[in-house]
Image (cartoon, rainbow, N blue to C red; front, side):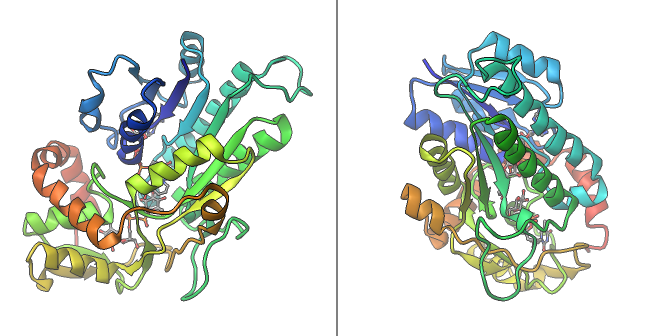
Length: 352
Ligand code: NAD
Ligand code: DAU
């Protein structure tokens, strides 16, 4: 039996990945390793609770000893590494935890995997690993910085991160690269554009706007709302990661994106119309410091080499996502607790 260790599996993308992975790979043992920060929610995985080959471990990836113990407990064959602090706005107010989790936490995982998987762990020159092992690092298009009104990020675009979040992810990417170059660790990196879909925490644009619409609250749009993001359904992202895991090249980087660019204002108006709410709910607020103007991914490498293409048409995916939030108001209500209210109040104090 093969064992896959998924870090950050209680978050938005990680939980979607685990459910989707299970459907496709019924015989794998799945270990979900998550410290359950504000963004981690085991309710996202209720369907997995009866699965005898699924195990959850509340472990912080920065805790080297706890991570090592997991490798002692199970013979881990593969790692898909999602765990991270993921929200740009939080990285502007509290950058430190982004460095400890996203950079040092990644290094702990790389180092532990290397020691456990290497056939001659005490030989620094050895590049021989146990057959079939693989470390997939889930990164982001934000490491490339910001685009002007045309052009796309390719895997060769220079890294030019602008927010502390993006800088922490770029640092992790470079560590992953270094562990491959120096130690021969079998790694693969993915860099995806903005995801949307079920179970996304309502601090991110789409679920925040849906939630505020339903609560008849103002919709805070940063700056002029003309920033562009390239939206991809989470299920398409998860499928791409699984393909990279099974068929990608070691040491390779794969961009993933939807060819689906929208300005923030365009997107928010679309949500308003679908929910039958007035545009007067929109409130332009002070811009995010260092706000990246445009992201757009050239995904031709993964399309060409691995045959991946997104299945979701955005117009359908966004409608399905809105319907999901309407049908899961209790999931949202459990999340928007005291801690969320404090965050919202601090973040959006200027919003009426
Ligand atoms: P998320 O914030 O919803 O989930 C992150 C998960 O990691 C949570 O369950 C949290 O509890 C866990 N976690 C955080 N710190 C931890 C630690 N120290 N130890 C163990 N677990 C910890 O994030 P997401 O949106 O699901 O993103 C997942 C990954 O995908 C991140 O690495 C992110 O950079 C990347 N990514 C996200 C997007 C997007 O649009 N959301 C796009 C591209 C890439
Ligand atoms: O591109 C991939 C990245 O996408 C991931 O790496 C990040 O983890 C993920 O959070 C996301 O980052 P963004 O900063 O693009 O996503 P966010 O949902 O925070 O914002 C999307 C756009 O909407 C951005 O231009 C900022 C704007 N925005 C966001 C919020 C929360 C607003 O105008 N108002 C808001 O209240």
